[in-house]
Length: 240
Image (cartoon, rainbow, N blue to C red; front, side, top):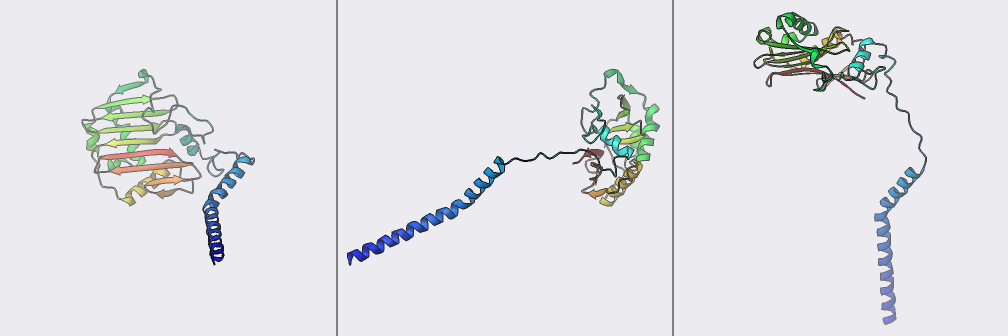
């Protein structure tokens, strides 16, 4: 009787032990699998993929696409221009003090108004505000980019103007906004601005989250109008 009990206990222990071993194997299987896969992946030779920063054939011959990549110092540019990043605060750091001069506002008032009107932004910046501007600093670099910085008591207006292509590339205004801009207004404004920039030849512009984006041209353009914070800004960026 005792022998039978011993045999039964041994079988039970064996079954339990086998169960524990199987359970451990099941638990460890994912780790073993990923270890083997990682070992295989790292040990085998991998071919290096060539990364190309060439623009699509559909857009690379469009002059304004090339120009935007130049002034944004883009890796998609055939000829990158140094020190002309539009979205950095140090955009004109490379310009000597002698090239950054205070000018009479009356000499540049009509020019600034003309730039804003042609690009479609004058409808949001009241003329009465421009009359309150009391100082104007004009800077120019050797790449044809002109910057205007206009200041009033509370108002600030900054423009970056491509004198070679006669186009407004960047705008930041702080002050009273003439009218409230709904989503549709911003879309219409950006669409017209794309046409003004001669970039409507690029066919894949998509409006997404208040930005115009072209994957073919690797460009993104944003217009931000906040009449509560009294800010209007136009900016460009490179996308991959």
